[in-house]
Length: 430
Image (cartoon, rainbow, N blue to C red; front, side, top):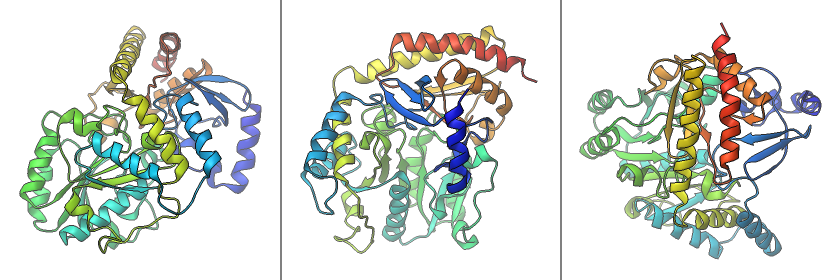
């Protein structure tokens, strides 16, 4: 019984819209009361009622080292002693930019910002200025932050709550965004031909994470690269989720595709608010104060976020890190598959590296349309059955789960045992 969570949620709803500061947290699609979290350490979080959970949300991806990682805690303690914000350049900003550039060769220059939304919004403005074009092409179900021009068929949060794309966005703004099915290269080709010399950028999550985990079809990203070059259109990778998650160099390294611009976030802040965009030096020279494309932020390059990010990346760079993440996640997903089959509960589990999604559908999930064939009621049954057994998953069918370096074999076995019962409960739901 989550007495304190229930009480806090009632209080929160009086002062905070919906009682939460980001919509999916509200448990609207799964029902019940969101757990208010008091603390986290390693692979576990503890709610205000003292209940402990094995966590596969990881603050929606940033905590690849787990909660309260010693290296991150030490970096933050050291920085707090020096100061929390200066509104002036710091040495660590340079170091983080260098580390990003080494991992992502496409990002010859980098601008640090405060969130993934800021990163994509700023990169879009830059792409429009550089190309002299206005139209943006995105993909159904891909979320790039809540900037007006990108809130078209925007994936998880909107889909979870069953909302239209969003009131408050001028029609003339959304009219400049064209959204097409993910993995559909033929439609991309058609759109680029139709709007010849109008499309400034194609923005894509190279591995979608905001309609659940959806992998690019073989050759899809490579064909996007070829088409955009042919049409003088910039290719922009939104690697806010995949950056440093599926490989040290993100999807660009894994799939060997070099975009013109890229957006990062989450892991590069080690759990603190952060974002970054960067790319080819010739393009980035357009950003103020070097160029005329204005973008600024009081807390951009915040010393705490930068210190946590550097500490995280140093840990990730150690030999064997991604091999361990791959092994842990493969073991867990294999166990989940077997549990679902034993329960005769039809699911599809998509995985790349240490991110995965269990879709409650019998149809392969390759885009937003197929993701939405999922039985969200069964997912809700599964979610609550797992929660009752001490497993904390994202409260939405259309999100990714994340494994961290802090997860142990014991955690994974406990999760698989819980899933064996949870899948039976979900299979029985009509």
